[in-house]
Image 1: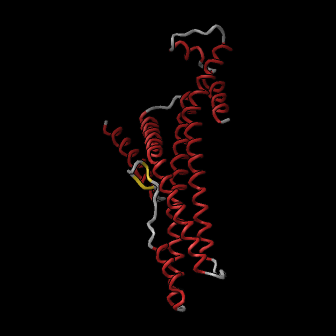
Image 2: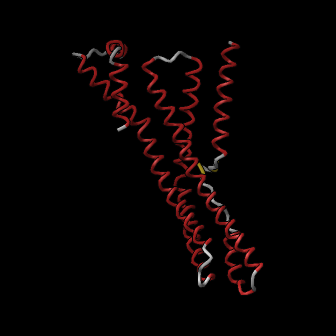
Image 3: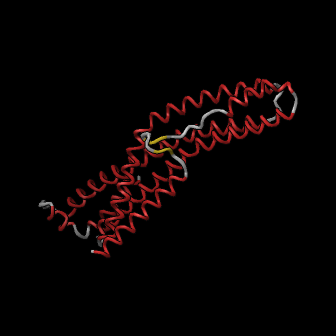
Length: 246
């Protein structure tokens, strides 16, 4: 739907005014304007499909899978907080088994998505840097405005959504560890019959936090967004200073 809308707008609003100039540059002369409109519409549709729809579909699919595991971790944390269990040791044992199962699946998910995440992040940042440098050093023609805006917003949406979704996994795991540590303190202050519970809580507390990685180069945290925006801002300042010097 998005490529259809954007290609239609870009074709009839901008390219339609310069259809002869567009094809003259390509050394092609359509038989009539309707044929020219159709050709441009198909080209624009393929362009927006490749640069907008496919990256967004990948990001949405990946975020949906990661968010699902985040919901599992939230449910485990809520189960851990419940204090009305008849047999606390049995409940903790079941929670630990579920946690181990989810932990293993998250590791497999991280290994599976690692290379793909690195590639799509690299593409997004390359798009952002190219768009930023072009906008700061050139006067933007109107026929390029839609494409630059589409690529820029798509890259920003992907970076923000992927970072927020992936950073939720370690945050939820940290919440589980904090809940287990709090219950561990309560058990210490209570009766000695909670030794088994203390052992199970200790195992949960000592679990490592898993970070979704992009090619082993970076781990997704929300602080990554701040550093990314800072890098783009610094890059923009360098371009402006270079323009003033030249």
